[in-house]
Amino acid sequence: MISFAFTDEQEAYRAELARYARTRLLPAYRRRAESTEFSWEAHKELAALGVLGIGLPEEYGGAGADSHDPVTLGLVTETLAYGDVNVAAAPVQSGLVAAQLAEGGSREACERYIPELVAGDAVSGIAVTEPGSGSDAAGMRTVAVPVAGGWSLTGEKIAITHAMCASTMLVYARHPGSTRSRGISCFLLPMDATGVTRGHMPGMGCLPLGWGSIAMDGVFVPEENLVGEEGRGFASAMHHFEFSRSALGLLCLGAARASLDEAARYAQQREAFGQKIAEFQGVSFPLAEHATYLEAARWLCYRALWARQVGQPHTDLAAMSKWWAPQVALDAIQAAMKIHGNLGYSCEFPIQQRFRDVMAYLVADGTSEIQKRIIARAVLAKTVN
Ligand SMILES: Cc1cc2nc3c(=O)[nH]c(=O)nc-3n(C[C@H](O)[C@H](O)[C@H](O)COP(=O)(O)OP(=O)(O)OC[C@H]3O[C@@H](n4cnc5c(N)ncnc54)[C@H](O)[C@@H]3O)c2cc1C
Image 1 (tube, rainbow, N blue to C red):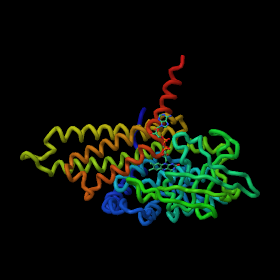
Image 2: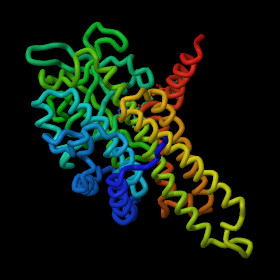
Image 3: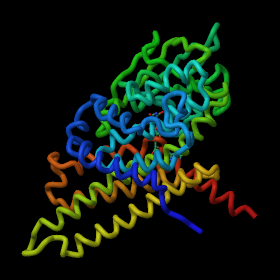
Image 4: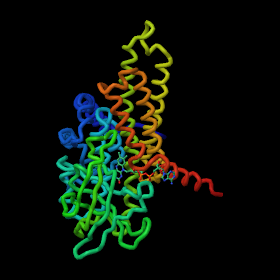
């Protein structure tokens, strides 16, 4: 028997967050999106709503109980993105970064850093990409040289979400002399450590997420800041990306749904040739088509998150969610822009902003080409005689 139902608890939480997204987030989305300042006020509100503790251990301030809850994180992300796609990225970061720390961090590091993330007093991030290696992450060059009491990190990371506003960062670096995915470890880097410098990289969207570069010049990281097993950080990063890929799909779809709803409302008000434009099939059919694509894509994302939750293989499902959902979302936003005519292009309306913000996820967390490589590998493996 198949069930597509969320639990009563999830439905109640969704209703509460949907209200918050529509009444609190949406009215100020454009204002926040135009600023390069991280949206601390909204982020603290997420903490008060319990969003930042989902899936994290109770002893560090998290919701505990069900310590592994990717479906709820996805549901929360999709719901909040209706109001503000940038603010809604926070639960994805929780599942990607704080969860990784909780899983593989030392007791000292978890006690020191997770409570502030759950309380919304600090944000963290994940730094893999370098100037010479993005899609080919195993080509990274940042080194972690063993020294007395820890490691010394040297290298540069670029295109990092939260680089400008994070107080800590999960940095991936390799043991000197190691190659490809072997010898890569994950370290919790305090961003105020001596030898760390950061630089802003202004993008076409996602401005409040503080996108930027991080340079490390002989930065000392103590032993207790190793996250996970030494030399096995690459596999751990990939495991966590299998959560964020589907959650980012839902993030984009939430923003697209807001745009389609706005287009549907507008189409029933705007008149042309003596009738409401919604009465033209040239307007109503794109609404119907994109509503269909959004619905199909969101269930693909939830299926991937559900498979993760119950411990089933989901590498290919996560990759499918990541290449398809952002594209479906972007196409829907574009259709909504067109239905608004000149107003869709205007900065007075949120649709153009969503277009620029959602566009980031065609690349962030792995491009569609990289996702298709992963899917193709699975498809081909299944058909071996
Ligand atoms: C908004 C935003 C936020 C980001 N946040 C983070 C973050 O927090 N942390 C982090 O570590 N990184 C982050 N990134 C970086 C992102 O993960 C990389 O940009 C992405 O993985 C692509 O790497 P690249 O930019 O070096 O492109 P490249 O790897 O140089 O790729 C260039 C082009 O070649 C294609 N290509 C490469 N290899 C293949 C192949 N084998 N087959 C087919 N096509 C291929 C790619 O698909 C792409 O179209 C972010 C990026 C963006 C845009």
